Image 1 (cartoon, one colour):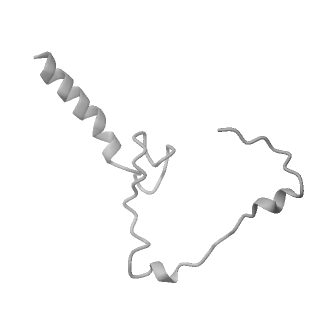
Image 2: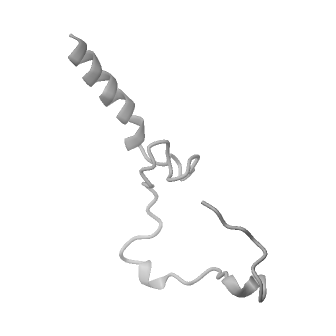
Length: 73
């Protein structure tokens, strides 16, 4: 019986992680609490991906000759 309970708890905990981002809202890093990085949005597909254009760019040399920031992860 304990094995059945453990299996049921394990599958019920994984179910929300498989849903992905709902309505395009990424409320967590990686789309959802399971970090699935999945979105069901279909505005970009194989038919129109070649028509995409760069919307913006950010260059690292915008900081100037000296980096005054301490990046840590």
